[in-house]
Image (cartoon, rainbow, N blue to C red):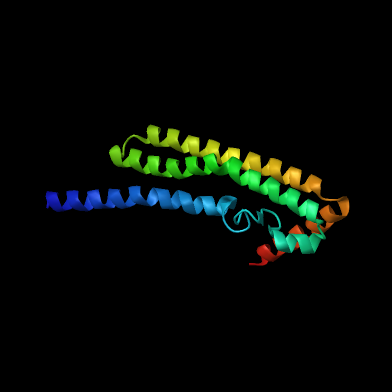
Length: 157
């Protein structure tokens, strides 16, 4: 009976430990790293794909090129933080596998995750500011209307 209990307990702990990276990854999708963020080099976080933004906002070729560069630079700037997040999820799982009772080590790794998330968000905020400065006041007004419609549509879901 004790051997059976030990096997089931070990299996349950293993399942929980292996679920941690997936739970963190699902949380990240809901935080703003899923749909609507960066879709390759041609993506724009607020407007979707560049083609749609160029037509909807009436962007000049120069503005489109400037925006593409801003978001390409953002993607490159955030690459180390994204790698840190990925590696951090694996490190958390490994720390818990090594010692399920050492929550302090897992929490320290989780704090590093939070720092990387914060850096990505700060970089994204700066890029959004730069992108909005590329637009004329009229284009910013169109962008504002577009975002309000998009938020209303998402609220209806």
